[in-house]
Image (cartoon, rainbow, N blue to C red):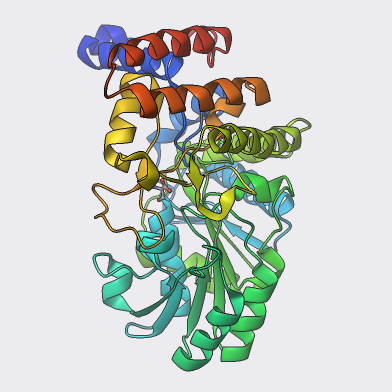
Amino acid sequence: MVNRTLAQADSQIAQILAKETERQEKTLMLIPSENYASRAVMAACGSVFTNKYAEGYPGKRYYNGCQYYDELEQVAIDRAKALFKCDHANVQLHTGSQANMAAYYAMLKPGDKIMAMSVAQGGHLTHGASVNFSGQMYESHFYGLDPDTDQLNYEQIRQMAMEVRPRLVICGASAYPRVIDFRIFKDIADECGAYLMADIAHICGLVAAEVHPTPVPFSDIVTSTTHKTLRGPRGALMLCKEQWAGKVDRAVFPGVQAGPLMHIVAGKAVAFKEAGEFGFREYQRQIVRNAHALAKTLLDEGFTLVTGGTDNHLLLVDLRNKGITGAEAADRMEVAGMVVNKNLIPNDPTPPAVTSGIRPGTPGLTTRGMKEPEMALVGRWIARVIHEGKSNPQVLDKVRGEVEELCAAFPIYLDL
Ligand code: DSN
């Protein structure tokens, strides 16, 4: 039984996999938190490293037979430390949510005050939202964006921090198109006597390539996923200073996790190597150039961008002047082969399941090798779909055909 191929063992799943592979090849990935992992990363994740328990850490395991798991995890840790220039890295986190949970577990007691950006203004669910463990275990306070600029107003955040006196200040966002000044956040945290945690899930690749300033020197703990701009496997990591190393490791195991997914740790190790190679920095720079190019075309087509543009890998498009909700726009774009997600805009009058915005990003398209001319095409297709798609649904088929032609010219995987 163990030597059958997937097609031999389970034709149903093999068929679904084939359909998903085709969907990925024939559509444009515009969701900024997604990317295409390399063949090498996927090979490591789909390997015999899935077969073993390795609770504990290198040299201190609770299972026998872990010599190669020790070697593997140490390589991953050392590569993460070198890539992000930090004292300590934990590479066992299954997800970004668990990374944040472990970070809080390391730094806080239940009921402690935390202060973060609200989900409604671009923050993340695990930064204290009432429906999430973080909002129920801790007393959350939220800063938002400056109503005039839709950007972080550090003076307002400072004032709030001095009033609230949180135990932890959290910075980092899921839908913020501008540079985050981690140095100022560190000043604010110091001034109000708080720890500082930076969640860099979205910008992790940009940070690794020094295309966005790093929070590492300023933060007590940095958390991140590994599958967004970093382009690794679906998973997460934590980075910290030496003084937090023991607490961080204990918070991850046995604090919030037991057996690590060592096949995913293998994929992370490969991704960290790829992120340190020649070409990755240029890839990250191109992500930002592509985001600028997409922003320019959308502005030329009469779209409103929150903050007027972007410094990173994503744009937040305010659709209120187009008479369409984010949900309708995303559904219509999907018919035309462009997969994007609906997103709240600051002070959105509609609920999260509807929204007034979309959040296009360029990491996936850039992995395919697309550059500024292709971004101009994509921007014009988005405009046609939004402007004409309702009155003339044939436009959606027409655009879908053109999208598929572009996708064929920029294949992802050559022989999957
Ligand atoms: N789901 C991620 C995103 O799309 O931004 C955050 O967890």
